[in-house]
Length: 346
Ligand code: ADP
Image (tube, rainbow, N blue to C red; front, side):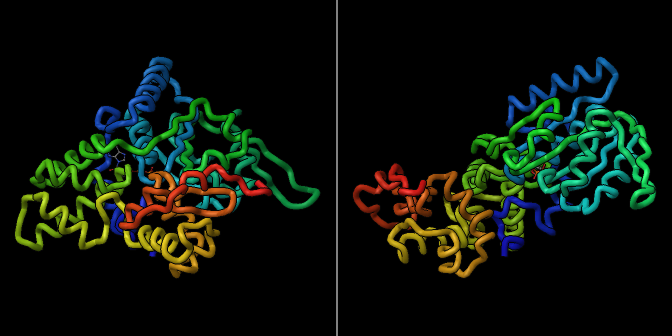
């Protein structure tokens, strides 16, 4: 289900080619995240002055905010090649050793979802990051010997959606950590306007604002919604995207004015109508909406909580006053006190 969701911040099948075309290529084109941009700019300028590879960089933040894009920008600004892999794609330490030993001097190694790297690979990475060395084990059992292999100086760019899950020895080996935050609506408007230009579309300001407000602070979603509105307008025989197109298309795809889609709304409605607003456990809630707990936990809940529709309490999830109001219900009196009543075992 999450694959098809229009507001899924993860990259889906039809996104890859479209995203490639819309990815900013230089730091100057990268919208928002001013602090991170400034820090990276300093880092790059210093590395270029020293004529050396930049320090290892850790990028953390939710999916769709520009971590891969930044890694690619780093490579192009350093005029360095880039190798891309991800934690779950590396199943053995040997896979990682093979990649590392084939890197060239100054290469950027982008390792997405670094928190999902298997333990033995992670340990191998420590040595590689610190001493630019891997120990290749030859043979098996008591006769096995470790042959040290010198690596070229590369820059590891690790990306994670869960910085808290990284063991500290790994985190400490990054020279610089940048946290990407959700984008302001005005920044998303810039993203949409830039993408529309690249796609050769004419779009009204009010249509841009409508899409931005439903994009959950996430450029990937903004770009995807823009493409759906374009499809809708084209089917209507129009090449200019109006506010009317944006509203009608997004209503058709069931993305509401606050960016909630059908799953988010059904979670909120179940919480309110079946459980009196909670508290209720996440798995009970997932069963009530007929979804996997994992889907509700990783997709609907973070958005609902971050935007104040739902709250986590030690006794379970509760709907906030805003959550009640969003589904057209009056919040019960005294709802705020629920937030500060810890469970006896909390
Ligand atoms: P992540 O790696 O964090 O999941 P990506 O770097 O793949 O996210 O970004 C997803 C898409 O969003 C990219 O294709 C790019 O077009 C767009 N995007 C992300 N950040 C920005 C930004 N700051 N400015 C413009 N477009 C962006």
